[in-house]
Image (cartoon, rainbow, N blue to C red; front, side, top):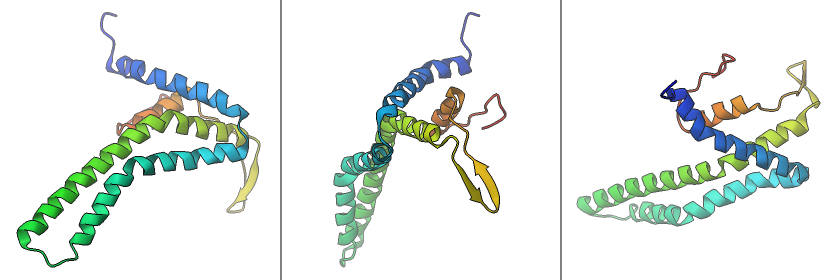
Length: 156
């Protein structure tokens, strides 16, 4: 085959991410359950630290809207707020892209640790026996990027 298909090109860009997830998954094996749980707080703190400045500016501008302002000035503030919201969204998206391998590895490690766990839900006994396969990680990455993934298993 001379030219790769769209699917093959997409896989080339996603495979290194899956490899990184699996490396981190193995590294997280040595973490205690508490340390693994703490990873989620670390992710939240990273997002907050990257967005604190923008959120502060947004809060200041929203506070200024409570004052009696001329229409033109009010419209300028709304425009600036819109731009800051877009900037904040872009920063969050970038941080989420950055932490994706770590977050997926935490979930995969948590799934592994839950294997064999049983509980009752709505009167039914449930037994956890799932650890995400690479193809499921690929599907999650594709969904994170805002695309639609159809998996060979029919999931997606």
